[in-house]
Image (cartoon, rainbow, N blue to C red; front, side, top):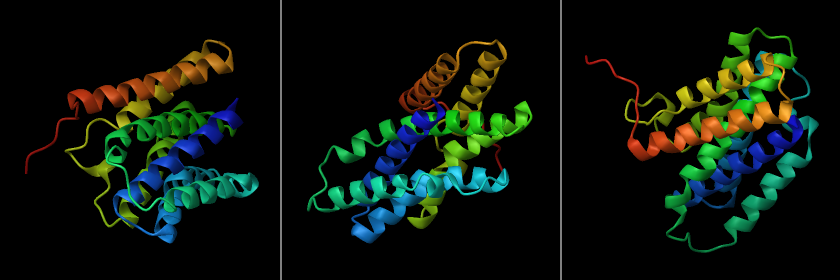
Length: 201
């Protein structure tokens, strides 16, 4: 189940990166680079922190091939459709949920404590976007006080997964439930502009 979730996460993260790069009017090299960052950035950090080798996208060497193919396919289109910006929140929310669930599961199987496993899930789910924003020369939305709940959705979903797993439920139920929670929370946060309180200077 984790392998399927991870593959879907790579597809969602890569698609988000591709759409983001096309919105910035990048060429193929730029599109592929951003897609690699958003698809593999968070999981790479997780693997480095957990000392897992080879890195997940090197072990599953078909992942970069998939991202390369998707990047090339999208780059062949001369114009970016107007709906691209409107659908960006969907692959973003899906990628957040899928990567978070995959990350917390991998960390728990690696012997991490519950809290560290939840943190690894958040890192896996969010830092691909952070790296993508940095490469696009933007302040990462994760750190902006104007961004609706993002890491919080991941953190709550990771804890939902952990509690369900402690309850002895089937792994598919645990993962799908946590995934649904994260995606729904993120989309609601975007719809209703839910944010954490910020401190005034």
